[in-house]
Length: 103
Image (cartoon, rainbow, N blue to C red):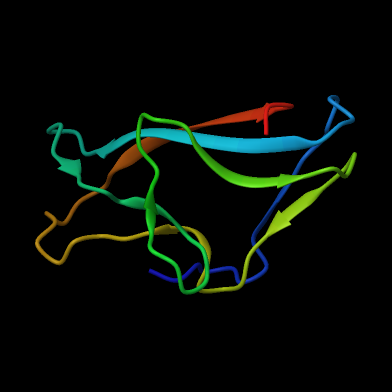
C-alpha cells in the first residue's frame, strides 16, 4: 500500500552526536476481536526484498548527522502490506523506535 503522503519522513533529534542507527520494532496490528494482520508493516528498500517489522528490532536507517531526516521514495520505506485475505476492519498497532550509537 503506497503512502497517502508522498513526503512522509522521520525527523530525529540526535543526542548521540556520533554515527547512529535507527531501529524499529512493532507489535502485530490487531482489531477489537484480537484478529491480527500478518506481516503488515514492512520496510521496502528500493528493489531489495521486503523486511517485515515485527517484535524483533530491524535497522531502518543509519547516518552521522546531528539532526537527520529519514525519508524514502513514495514506494519505499515503511509501508503497510495487507494480505488480500485479511479481514476488513479497524486495526491498531504500535511501533517502537530506538536511536542507538551501535552500528
